Length: 300
Image (spheres, rainbow, N blue to C red):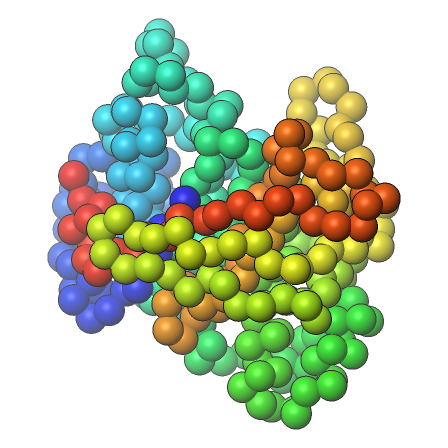
């Protein structure tokens, strides 16, 4: 499931009221690590986005795990990726709740907050608003950080066009979502340059439903990943990590809300795997998307 909250003026006003009195004015569901994280954030706009993302995370995971939001405990895995942990001395939350089987990932960018949750496999999500300004031109960034095939695809479009900007943001968010899902991060050997995406056969399918229940209108796209740098996933305990395989991951990319580009990455479940020699993608997986119209949806 993917959850989105556009931060319009009324949502920003609500967040400012919560932040007005510092840590003491924050909702009780937030943990000490949440409060410390917000206290370290100096930029007001970023602080609002981070507060909204933490409220969204605890609210949604509380429903998923049947555990009260304030009782959720988070740890950090390899690459800094957060995950749920079991509180010492409890039974692991609500009925059927196993922290190891609840996967999630957050993103926030210029007045948009997003969360992706799965009870099946690791996930990653990233979003960028189209209006975001960059210090360098998009093509200058692409030539430095993207694979040659991706640069050529961008160069084939009119320079400075809306079409070129959207493709750049799709490629950027796909890379970020993949690196977040795997826990590798931008500074890993794979980084942005060595995960190459081909969107030549993709169609936009990430248009989101609205309202309280969302809708299942996001289907698998023909987005193909090629890894040009051999690497392994982050270490987990003493067990040797398996090598990364491009065919183990699926992607969706598009506009969940007007003016924003977002991408989601998830690991293929074992029963969905198709031998790479077949040269085809696994069966479609739907992404149920919710777009909240109010911050109240995520307040206790």
